[in-house]
Length: 599
Image (cartoon, rainbow, N blue to C red):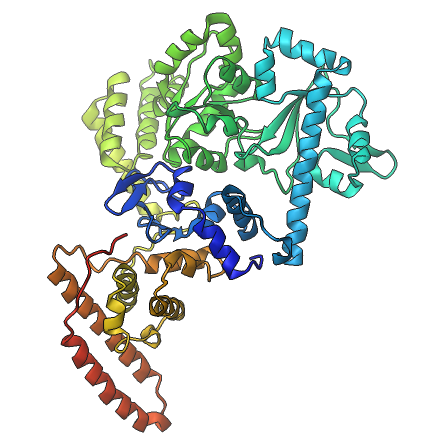
């Protein structure tokens, strides 16, 4: 973590309300004193992702992800702490002093900024060149062959790379760029004999932008019949092709409840021009889990609109299960007799394309249909093979109701006895269950199904109770101290909670910032989210708090007994008497609560 002062970290954190920040990524609905939505870090259908305005924290009761606004950006955007600070400081209009960074982080941040600045200059250069005499061929391609208007070309920042293979290199060198940073940017190749030469030349250019509209890379289509037809930037410290989508910076603002998933740049541009501002495409790579998780941040439904040829169908069949596994509903748009969205809309109109979206085929039924087309259904043996294959495919649905709905539809459409198919599906599912163990969540955070140690639950519950009911502190601080928390992390958090309560300035989100990494952030967040139970009355809550206090104290007593040496026996006896007095005091406590707590 870069070393910013604690005061500056707190200034930036407090200037960015976590509900507003997370709400720009995840759809949240207020429920009681908290906001809830679908967790962006694991697949779920019922929202267990909680964001607390009062605590300025988030926590998922499903997978255990949790933390403050910094943690969220570090997990969601894959930022390091410095990048999260920079993002939030920029968002709040706070200028960060450079001297607060470590030399290593400062060097990395500077290099990142230099590459982004070079990309911006290159995009400006390509944009201007397209509109100059040197770019006439590119402008003709966009306007005549692709039928793009000036506004669309401006919106996507389209440009042209000169026919000379070192034009950009010379321009950027004239701007003071070094060979080292030019090479790291991916814009230029440096050869000992040939010197510097452009990665892109004699191509129409498509700037690739991140969600903050920073130019992070480029795609280029060659003019004429050269190879490769399309060329993309290599991966750099600002560009990871498996975690970025072309057009996402625009599509994320759409009011449509779905994305259109395309294969290429021109498909995205043509769809946006036709009014479908929800189109995105992967960047010169096969569709990945990273792409699916990126899409899931914005929509729950995706319409695949790949080319209708064999390669497009295969690509769709690869993408469907990836999207489904991410919890995204998938449909496939039929563009036949035309090849792609651009060709379809030019031939038939945007209105007709809208109708194709309305009549898009369910992704799973698309998969089944293509399996069906591979069997000769007049042959009983092949028909049986198909039915067995479909039964196996249906086991992908673990939710009983969802599986039954698909099972019923498949049996109806392909004339399979529904009861026989159901028995076969159950047989296959049971067989698979006997051979496989549950997989961890894709982000590596496995759900622990073992019953958690009751002693630790009590310590967690007490920390939550103190945060929810600050007035409790004065009543118990002489009976339970941070030293009664036997887990090291719990002890550290208890110390900070007690310090905050003593000073009358307890901010849970600030406590999270005192820890170093995302894993610790999630563990600390969990300490502030442990319910004692679903209690209806204040009397129930008071009894539960006293029971929790007794468990924490008794656990502390037992722990200390097991760590006492023989030489300490006299002190241990005295401590035992003292502890018994404290336990008696806890039992006789008359807890008072202000009833102003909450998530």
